[in-house]
Length: 452
Image 1 (cartoon, rainbow, N blue to C red):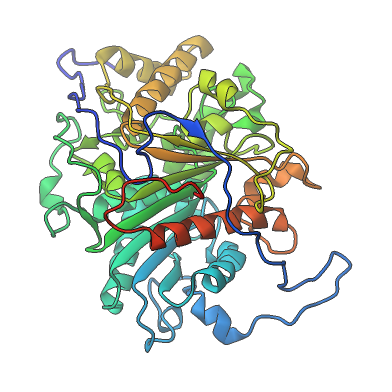
Image 2 (image 1 turned 180 degrees about the horizontal axis):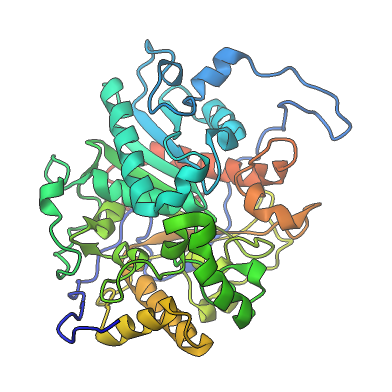
């Protein structure tokens, strides 16, 4: 495909951002959490031997706010209308999944957070709907959130908790829901995907779906895509497998596969994930993320064969060695949570997409040499890191090295099944206590409390 020399997409510089309440430390630092010990596990089973506990009642499940498959916001999904929760917590599942994957998390968060939270599991992108592209799924999620917000006038705050691909879908959705002046961006503001970036506002400014954004939390999400060394671990880092996987991905998982491997769209157009690391005409992705009081990344350091440590924690290869902690050392009260790191915003120009990258993308799309494809992905990965590190992040490392079946780490981290994947219960406890901590924090406070 011939490339026009005039179509060079260059992202305009962005000033460094000040620290917010989750990232005000002058430099990255590790800290052990000192939350109270998690209460005993007492749901369906008391032990592996099969001694059954009393099942949760149907009304309790209704409180957990799961919608029925095939409808956006059904009456069954909005029970107990007499309650007036103020904080909407949206749960977003990953690829080929459903709201049922959140059954344990919904019930546990409901028990720990109380009635002030409306815990809602998204149902608009179930199973193969996740194949239609991150952008399409993100728009559907945004529409679903709008309907929920319109049905509950008591809501004042909003947070997101997403697993795997759901984290990317949520990132797209919050940009669609973002407003800096009380009105969401409309289709009229999106005119071109090849225009320069617009200026980015300050942290903690703006609303999401008209609500105050508080927490944006992802669990094992491939923020940098899945191509490249150890980004999709089940390929074992072998170049030949990675070369085959990229052209095969769209066949099996549709447009989403192309977007994860950074080969979507025309060569002259930056891949979607790179655009999502910036403020561009497609959406104010960085401003939307920056509006949240706190952004948290939970990442498996090993045994996750779907999403690698680097891409889920937004780190460079050299940063992994520096931040490594022995996998058998869990923080007090949170089994398998091995380290917490606070990273403030980094000063950089933000992502770029020069003509050389467009040429490399065209070669990658045409299954060119492994070396050129690798160089393309590495350059895009670095640009995405630069864009996303303009914001502060709390990074939580998780290791299931000592679990009975560590190879299920990708499902453990969000307790997909309460019985088979309950090794991740400590991670969910950590998530719940983080949310409670942020809820109690004064709105004017910009400090990280020692117990966080």
